[in-house]
Image 1 (cartoon, rainbow, N blue to C red):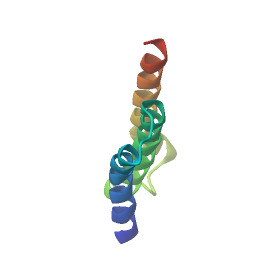
Image 2 (image 1 turned 180 degrees about the vertical axis):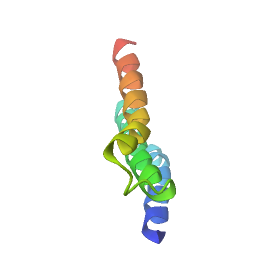
Image 3 (image 1 turned 60 degrees about the vertical axis):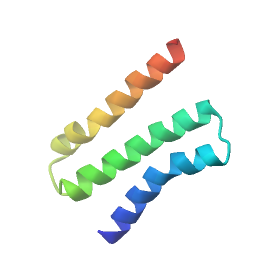
Image 4 (image 1 turned 30 degrees about the vertical axis):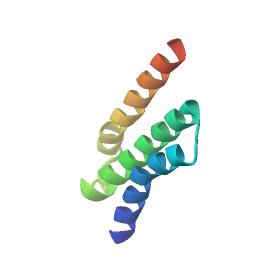
Amino acid sequence: MFVVYIILMLCTMAPVIAIQVGADITGLIWLVFVLVLVKALLLVDHFMEMKHAPFGWRLASQGWAVVVVAVLAGIHFVA
């Protein structure tokens, strides 16, 4: 569980570090999208304790992140 905390903290710090080293906005947006998916996977599996839940329940609870990222990426490309 400690490893999950560390990974979540690193995922939270990564965009800030990327800004400080001068990442461009497009790269930063895609980094945040990927980190949202990673964090959703970890939160659902470890903190909601759905690692051993039926596949349908895990898919439904992790699918929100994929939908949100897809919609935001679509908006980003259109705008």
